Each structure stands twice: as structure tokens, then as C-alpha cells.
Length: 314
Image: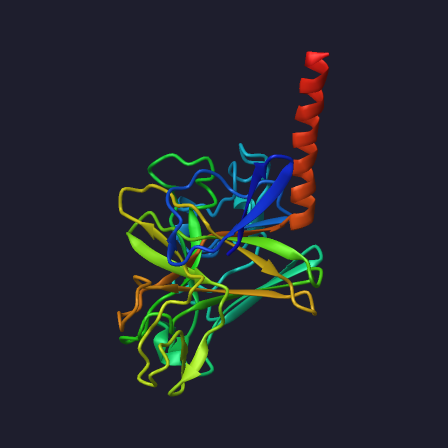
């Protein structure tokens, strides 16, 4: 991830680049502002399951998708329409008839999003629905017990549960975004949280590699020892209910206008720790200003201040 920090030295503008490794995102303080897309995943049972009446799958402000207090409007993915969803049934083991899926896709205007798990070589790393390695979802029914202005976004999620003893990183979620402008850098924010239990979720823009017929993040010794990717960002929450800040990556869309990020459950440190479930509650996409534009903006502000001071002295 790259964060842009604007500083001044005389009349020069210095643009510093910070690349934190193994970063913890900390508590939630707000979503990305002025995004081009904000998506709220609304998991859980369908309308024919008894849980749905007591556990609404909502976006911000109940059934009406109006802007949240930050001015951000969240687009629904999943959930019954009468509770503010889009009518799509996400994979779930809690529906009257369980719904299996290893990949789901939706188009939001010109932007396509696909969320998937790797069943090509890691099928045993994921919990199964009706004997099939599948994603799953939950409708918790209540937002975080500790108030967050975006509680409803944090309410529901889709996840990849663990199979029988996989190494962390093997049960990862892949979020692929398409329809973006090639060569443009975008900020991608990933929100992971479940108020019912504490967990740790790790996100990275580094693709997994294949070792001994297993996809994951390895140390190169051919014994499938997990090693955290250098750009890993860790989201950790506890059972006290406090919501967590997103992992945010600045990523340049490839020549086809695509961006891909990966998320996996586990403690995120080097070694063969066991995997834990992988969570995604929502995500956002925003355009990152060009460094030259930011420098000019800072220089303009500096020059403006200088002119004002000159006028005050006149």
C-alpha cells in the first residue's frame, strides 16, 4: 500500500511514500469518502427460512439505501428486497435449501465484481455445504453492540470457513474488480468484521503461489510454511463488539482494467499457524489522485498563503 503524505520545505513540495508492512488497521473511524463504488454484502438466509423474519439483511438506514452520516451510499449485494437487499441469495448453509457456490459475481454500473474461493487445488481447505467446497454467509440480525455510524454495513458478511486443518492462507477469498480504467491507481478498501466472535483477517494485493499442489503464501522452502506477504494488512477484532477500520490498498489497474485482492483468516505472522475463517462485510473503490496533482495542490495552497501574507504586509 502507498499512502501519500504532503509536506513542504520552503517553496518546494515534498511527496513522501510510506509502505507499511504487517500493518494493523485499528478501530473504525469512517469509510472512504468520495468513492466511485461502495458495496455492502448482505448475507444470510433467504425469505423462505425462518431466521429471515427476525434477522433483517439491511444496508444503511434500514430498508432505504440513503447516504450514511459520512455521505456515502452503500449498494447492496445480496439480501431480500424488502429489507433493502438486491434480491440475490448469497451462498448459505442456513437457507431452507442450502445454497452452494464457490464464486459469485455482480455488475455495479460499469464495474464488475467477482468474489470467489480457490477450489482448483485448495478444495479441502474450505468448509463444505452439502459436500461441496463453498463460500457461506451470515445475517447476524443486529449490528455491532458498540455504536458505529456504519453498523448496518458491518451487520452481515460472506465468509470462507476452514476445512480440516489447513495452513492459514489456503482458505482465501479473492475479490476481482473489472471495468476500471487501465493505468489508473485506485484505493480499494476491504471491511472485515463479525460481532459474534473475535478473529483476525489479513488482506493483500500479492497473488498466492503454487507449492506442493497448494496455493498460498509460502517461504520458498517447499514445505508449505506460511510467510506473510510484504503488503499484508491485518484486521483484528475482539468480542467487545468494536468495529474495525478497513484494509486499504492503492492499486493500479492492469491493461485490461482489472484489480485483484486476496483475504485470509489467521494470525498473519510467519509459520504454520492454522487457518481461520475469512470474512468480507463490504468494500469500496476510489480514485487515488496523481502524485503530481497532489504536489501542485499543495504548492498552490502554499503560494496562496504567501500571497495573502504579502497583502497583509502591504
